[in-house]
Amino acid sequence: MKLCSLLLATMTVIAAATVQTVPLHAQEAAQAAGTPEHMAPYVSRFGRKRAVVAVVAEKNAVLTDFVVPYGVLAQSGLADVVALGANTGNLQLGPVTIQPDASLAQFDTRYPDGADYVIVPATSSHHEEEVAWLKAQAAKGATLVSICDGVEVLADAGLLHDKTATGHWASYTERTTKYPDTHWQTNVRYVVDGKIVSSAGISAAMPTALALVEAIGGTSQASALAQTLGVANWSTQHHSDAFSIRNSDRLTDWVNMHLHHTDTIAMPIASGVDEIALALQAEAWTRTMRSRAVVIAATAAPVRTRGGLMVIPSTTTGAAAPAALTLNVNDETKDGQMLDVTLDAIAKRYNRRTARLAALAFEYPWKGL
Image 1 (tube, one colour):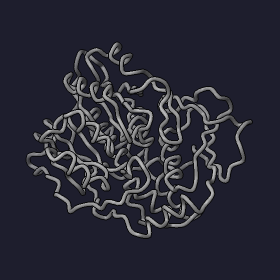
Image 2 (image 1 turned 90 degrees about the vertical axis):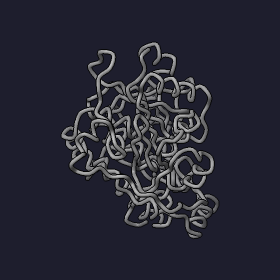
Image 3 (image 1 turned 180 degrees about the horizontal axis):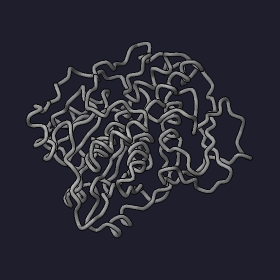
Image 4 (image 1 turned 45 degrees about the vertical axis):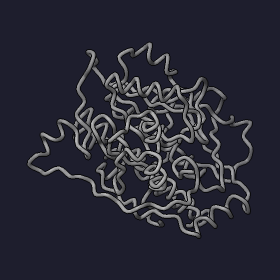
């Protein structure tokens, strides 16, 4: 059971290895080939004018792992970003339903040479079709970028042999046991090992996506986008040893699940909604085990987000049941600050212990941790 894809784990993180750094005098040459802290600069293939980025998921993938990288890359304007469903039909990503742009077969028809980058979210289970497709994409030269415990999908595809990688803090013991041929690091937000990039828990999705923007468009474009998003930096610096499960966390989780009623959190959306803000808020409130997010629109038709994702509303304005709380998804909060604002709101409505549960799941260094 992993916090990245579920709500609570009973495992604790093991002592960390240190991230390799690059001497300043060698940094320029090292970056050209890619380092543990920098993805190699994008080089156009097959005569493409823009990089092709595929975000692929099963129906039970983690919402933020999928939507945040999609939204960041879409906002960059540097790539053609395609939302793929490894199964047929819509993608049920936690409290939000996404209509994918294409199936795996449709993508292969459109891009027979493969994607330049493939982003792989965490999922509670995955199937042979996705694993086989990822193997094929790797063979075609794609860089594979896992978010959170999406790294286990890459491991199951046999792509992490003798590679250095990372994942969610709470799954460290499980990963080291299940995949002993991988060099697992902790205390790092993301790791680059050639054409394999892996990230820590859910909140690492945004810095990892910005590192990808830097690889495609350069540091200045990544810096400009980071400023727009309200992200201070996208470095690999991270302290996963700060995260652990206490007995009080287990008690709070049990109490929230069994002794409290479930609040309905209404999230009205319309065309142009910020998909990053939607995902972060919907997932954080859902992780409390005291509420469920309901996406509401004027009609039942899919709603196109700012970045181009198609969101299927849970219900319509006229049919929606009364909600305990209605969120303004498109408020003035920058995406990079949304988790802090949302966790503070959760602590105010419920308590800090409940907000801590969500922060642990996101592997996010919230001030109340």
